[in-house]
Image (cartoon, rainbow, N blue to C red; front, side, top):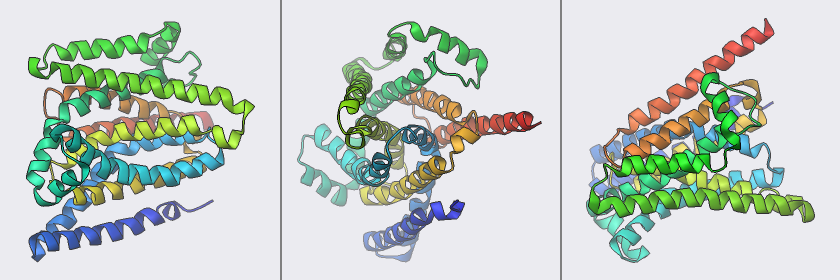
Length: 345
């Protein structure tokens, strides 16, 4: 069995390189030691922010990876991290500016490098749509877990057993997400209502589309090559899920700095630790060892989805989001330890 530290050797190496690059970037940006140290510290804070916001993502990833073929596990943990770091932390913010400002990708990159304040302003204006999309998608992820009549482990039993009982009601999860959207839409400014509803519906449809693709691939893999097809649906699901988790971190990062490249370095370091945690959870089968950890992760996702909807109306500090998610998972961990102690007794 590998030691805990060995799982994080790549993340530690990436941390050293990333923070050195952050220091150098600060030096070239400001031309002095204070600027370099400032960028170095912001890089550290961004990495911690990403880990705190994405710990539940690691748990969900590990749960899904357990059912994937070894080949697709390897692909997700290699290609997937490249997509996560470069796609969501660099390309995604650029695409927001491309769409919002109606400019080309190279112009957006030039804008990020030469006019970071303007770049950050455009990102901030797109926040409502991003929050609505992410809120709808993540709420569907959480509700799809709880409204499952095959679910046997219940942490908050009073609620989870009732939710499992109503799993046979078709479309109930979709109805709840739509009801949430309608509730928040009453308070969205009229001039931004179209953006809110379009983004929320897009998040809902994206989840349903990923589910359909996954089921089609899962249904066809028995007639084809299992190693080639068995993990495609899960791979797509995990990539879209990771993207939704990344929304909050990417947007929150602009509260600390407007430098796109520093954001990519800081959040990239955090993403590497999330990958390492995912591998450790899968190989050590930690989810089976801690009975309620998965339940806590999905409650954390549900809370995050509500927070993202709330962010369409108010600013909620990223520290609050991270602490709530970590707190819920921490309580689930304590409950798991108590259950294991009683079971042994």
